[in-house]
Length: 244
Image 1 (tube, one colour):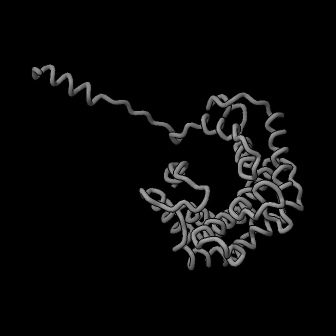
Image 2: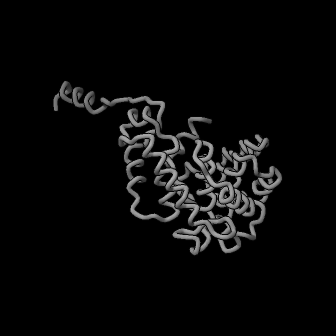
């Protein structure tokens, strides 16, 4: 190869493109479609299938090329989901995977409570009795780890940290409980639990512990190996990093 030809080859080989965006590199359309196409009607799929629709509007549909849907159809889907998950609520306020006779699902109980609270905030009617019972059960998870005695320590932390985040948004979490969970149990934490507990601590007035928990959680999420102890994944960590 001549020097000139070699130089041309090097220039071509080094040529690249740089794209800058304010959005994370996530294929929103594919994920949204996959959630809507969930084939089963279990507690998790019912909730996950409609959760994003709380935030969908005509502008976002155009922006991300999402499937066309009317406001009325989205409202109907959300109201149906609220009714369906409440039909899976057990006597103690928790939720079963398939119906109210199924075994108690700890982490998913908090997940459904999160969905119900956000649905209410968005203006959807959520029966107060079912919501109150679910909130009480999530509070028992946070206050009393003996409620979760059959779970491994890492899973107990995941449930309690998520409960801490959801309850703190509703101003129903005791700061003493949050501090105790951080001070004495954080050695059992996965990255998502640390992030959720950090948000709860910060929202409840302890910004020092909150910042330490968030920093530790983000650092753990960037490791090549980490523990899956909830429904968490690394998708979305870009947002936490970019928003500080």
